[in-house]
Image (cartoon, rainbow, N blue to C red; front, side, top):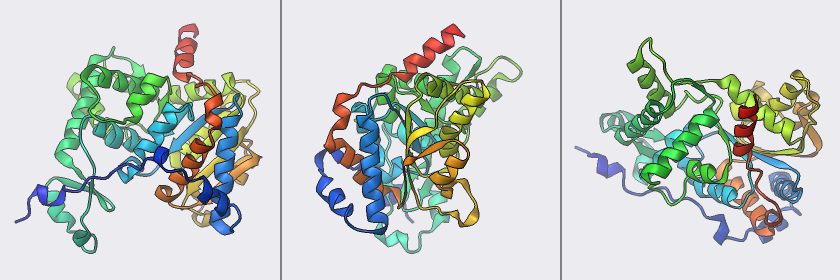
Length: 351
């Protein structure tokens, strides 16, 4: 009879772009064709964003990126002032990053299991599967409970996901972050706001459901997604020059692109995003948002086409090359972080 430890042995290790100078590879790819040349151009555009010190960089995360081993890449981008705001799915931020910050890990599904992994056995052992990666369901429930603890500690009112995630960072600061690297914790320290427009669609949702259920008809914490949209729109209004580094598509992609239109709706003259790159494996055949091109977004007035690039690649292959290239070129060394979380706090006080 298998036991849980049979499956949770080898941990996912996060790739370190600081120790791998990929510039020669990416430069060589610029002289190739197809996706290689697209990737090299995307890396050059990201570096151009960073060299443009007026530009605010918005990082969009969709897909299971943290569990796949990309967490340290994003943490290092925050530490190097290479990103000013993050728009993400809740799973990346809560189920995966906050989960690891509490001291837990993701695990590699052993080779012998990949061909015919018995998911019913995993279910019996309280193990959840993310493709070829495993996570302990019992530990994930602790993550749910930690989210509830954060909610219980707050004034009972509506919050943007940004406000709530900042409180999660403060919670890690109080209890001690158990991971060497954490997106939530580093963003909290660097005043980088994190938005999860579909925040309840993750482990945080379970914690918030438990919080609200326990309080019945009494006052409670809730998440205001419109406040999210308004806050991110304010960042565009206050910082007209912006660039998007989008990994995957879905809600984070659309949410970040739409702030240009939202600014117009509230009577502000906000230019299109000046720079935009997207890494995706989706294409245009099914009409879904994730595969819609950045040139199409220009027809909506969202993205300028001068510096835009689609890269059709799986994220774990493309992200270390693009981010690593920009890091080692070093244009980020001349820029200052925008401290947008502090800016939003000031806007809230005025309003």
